[in-house]
Image 1 (tube, rainbow, N blue to C red):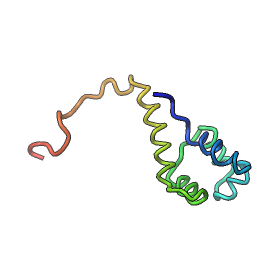
Image 2 (spheres, rainbow, N blue to C red; image 1 turned 180 degrees about the vertical axis):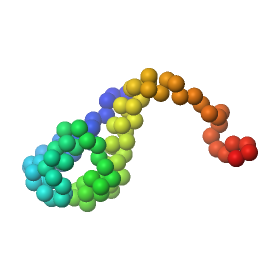
Image 3 (spheres, rainbow, N blue to C red; image 1 turned 135 degrees about the vertical axis):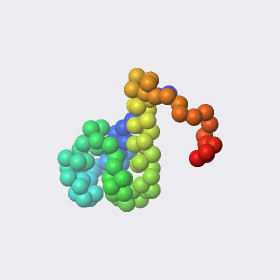
Length: 101
């Protein structure tokens, strides 16, 4: 599996560049600070629910698209750090209600 791009890179390459929008102009249109948008675009901050709502409205899309992109990015990076989860033990054998629950 390839490394999924940070949603900010997608925002920059597929939305801001084709529309000829600077970070400053896009931030003003989204109602956020230039710094906040710059941090998303440069991959230093993830897409929050608030930002997803703003992007969804600004670009006429479902905000869940942005949240899914962020989730895919986060899960891929978490899965690469297997040592963090090495000590986690399975608590039960099957999914669903357990006896006595």
